[in-house]
Amino acid sequence: MEIFIIGGIVVAIMVYVSTRIKRSAAAAFSPELIEKEDFTVEKPEGFLFPLREPPDFPFEAYSKFYGERSTRNIWRARARLRIHEGLVLDDLAAEAESGETFTSKELTDPTPSRREMNSRSERTEDEIGYAVYRRVIECADRGKTYEFRATMLENHEEEYSARASEMLASLRLR
Image (cartoon, rainbow, N blue to C red; front, side, top):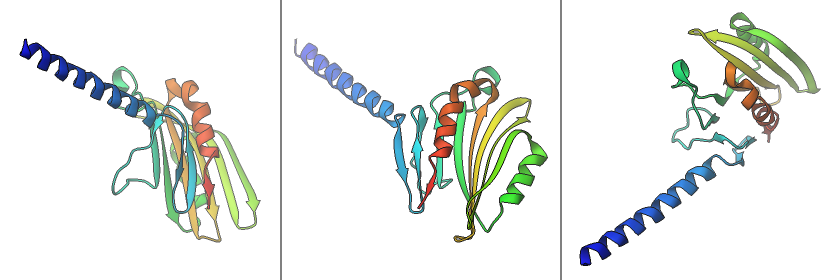
């Protein structure tokens, strides 16, 4: 009889811990504001912001799910922010144009010390198609260029394009 009581207690503890883990995992994919020293980004629902020390990128997020079959090891969508020293918007645009087909590209000068480029392009790598959304901000006053890129598997673009666009637009420099 004692073994049944102990077994019941162990099962109850396992159910409780499992439920807590599932809630924590679900919360990680909910929307949140990521605040860093020199920028903020609003991460949309369905993306995870990994906590790594040291981080690979100033900001990165990726989708909850991977692709299917031949893309089963590739996230359906991911976003990465890179900060380049110097004013390199033109260099980044030229580099992207050499390997991608642009479907839209918009250059703007919102302030005298700032230039921006928003674009959508397509590229193929290892016979896998990707849609690439970019927001590049060149800040003359800081001497830096912020390249925020969202890459989606081509067959999942419709599912993630709105959230990726919102995330790119949410980038605010402090």
